Image (tube, rainbow, N blue to C red; front, side, top):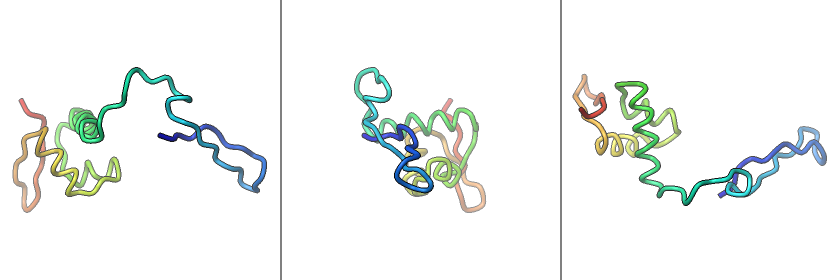
Amino acid sequence: MLTNAHLDPEGSTWGTLVHDLLDRKWKLRGRLPERDAARRELAGMVLAQARELTAADLAGVFSWRRKEAAAILAEIADGRDADGFTIYAPRR
């Protein structure tokens, strides 16, 4: 996995973005979670702070597709209908 390392002012009028390996730039503990588990965890964090949100809200935060956000929220939260869309809240 790559991450941004720094901006190199040489070689271009605007500078050049230099990339580095994620685990070389940042010391990571163990392995990263699988994609689906990471998305569920991130969605749970946003939902805990927002207390209520729609799939469109979550999709907007992470630039996910709304359908993917809805599927994740359906796994981790309770939903209720609200005039043609679903509002999700943390499970009790």
